[in-house]
Length: 108
Image (cartoon, rainbow, N blue to C red; front, side):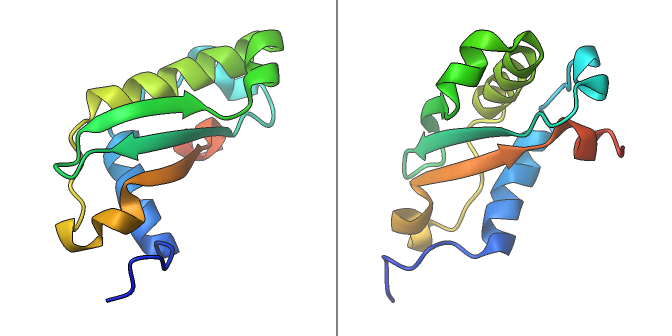
């Protein structure tokens, strides 16, 4: 058991997939180009969200399409709390960065 190994892509994808089920992509995101939102999420051992922060603060302040997509992704993080993740790997998933891509969600 090595707690400082990063999560695998499939483990991160599994966490993101749980949250994406709660994500309602804003209508404006469909035509807004590159709107990949990155959110830093901290979880409690039971999978409850402790905090969720949008990583690109400057873009959040200046781009209304990005802000709408970021707000909706952040809401989804809270709405889908708690997540299911392996308790034995808590040290590895207690803080993760999740990337949300509205165009991928919409199949564009």
